[in-house]
Length: 476
Ligand SMILES: [Ca+2]
Image 1 (cartoon, rainbow, N blue to C red):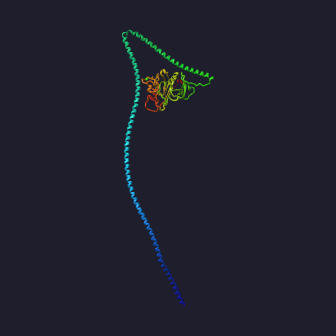
Image 2: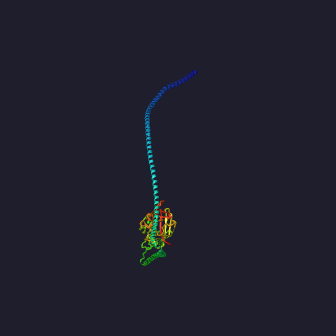
Image 3: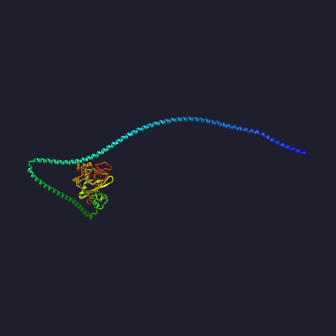
């Protein structure tokens, strides 16, 4: 039994083992059966996916092929067009270059032609300038030479006329003397004694005449002095009478009479010491005139007779204008020959000539004794006692020279100095001065023979000058 049980247990164990084995085999078989199916299904699925992907790629490829073809076509067209454009560009630039070349050549040719013409014109202009300058120099030289010749001619003519007069006189005397000699040659011896007596008498008479002339000169001088003193006395009396009348009038009519002065020196003494225009009444005159008073130069009290400074007033005038005076006392003017005569013949006067040149250099000429005669002696000049810085020699002509204007020729030249030299002045023939000549402004080396002149200071002409002639009682 026990063995039977053991056998049984053994058989049961074996059976169980077999069973487990068979079950495991069944499971594996089932799994094996299932595996091909899964594999097949997976394969199919993968195949399907691959097919789909292939189709998609194929479609994409087709599409890309088309794009490539189109691109290739476009590229081809573009290349063709670019080649055409390059060709056209080449042609165009070649044409441009050709045209530019032609234009440049033409412009250069024109430029050459015009510059040659300009050079020619410039050369012509230079030549004409040179000719003009040469002509101008020549004309200047000719003018200078002509003026010099004219002056020399004047002097020669004057000299010749004087010589001619002298020779005429001597010739006539000689002729008369010969006739007398021929007529009386036979009676000569008989008449010698008589002639001797006559000569003695003539000598005595000559002595007498000389003595009489001397006495006459002295008495004339005395008479002139007396006349001057009388004039001063008359004036003083008139002034005293006026003052008396004025004093008498004071209680009844207390109105203020303006004080009339005879010259700027009296005005200065009255206390007015500023430069300016004032009214004066010259001695022996019933009229008052306006004059400029210089109260600053060398002590002041100067009555200005002539002033030039800018050429604003025309000084080339006739006798009447110079007689009466012209211009503006506050600017350029001539006080008038009548006034100058009345002033300077009433008492001793001194003359001051103030000058300034274009560079501003100043100088003066002073005359301690100065007066001019009346119109009936053509306002003859008398200036003596020269001193000053405007030249070592006086530029005024010698005493007795008469005044001339363009319409009154009183000079000692056969020409008319007032017309040649311009203005009114005391011309000799024609003398070393003329402060009333033409006023030339600016600065120039050209000599102006009709300009303002003060020869012994600045030679034959003064340009852009300032001139003043003024008088003051001597011993002021
Ligand atoms: Ca003359």
